Length: 225
Image 1 (cartoon, helix red, strand yellow):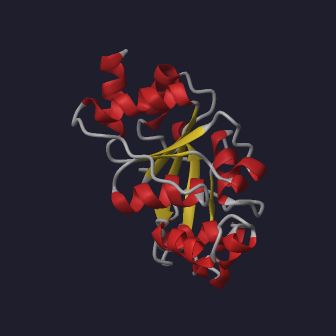
Image 2: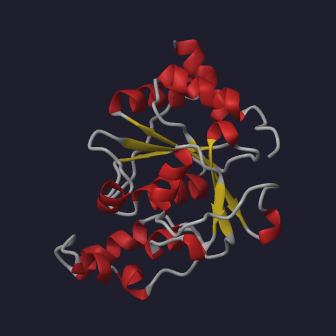
């Protein structure tokens, strides 16, 4: 695999300044099969996106198409396929007892960030092994670490950090699709699926960062430390 383009340094600094136990995860959107970074293998098992993120945080590098995505709602939010009809209408979550009416379920589904179904695959890697420029970097943190990261995000330009979520489709829509589409970071609290299947702990929060401004974040953390 190619050199990590300095992302090993960035990953080390994020771990050092925030005290992270797990590696931040680099995500790249791929439109065509030919655009898969050199040497990256296909995922060897079918998992949910949130599980694939955890797998990458443990050191694995791979790509996953819609075929390797077990959760079809997550795959749809990430632009890998059309959403199943019952997810799109809110029926699925209404049926789970998550909403008092189909109307509130549908309103929520319509406001969740989702990418048009145009992507061939997503590439996943621990940030220190990324041989590509990530579109999004996911940090699984505790609240104190997320606070420090939030302070770093406003250090240079000022403003406010947003936490935009609805308790569903958290690591797919909130932490990846949202930052990718809106070009700004987002904080989310996980969802029932990611906490049940992907070992998101009770005190974990998830931060989705855009890849372009990660250098500014590191600079801010350095100046604040």
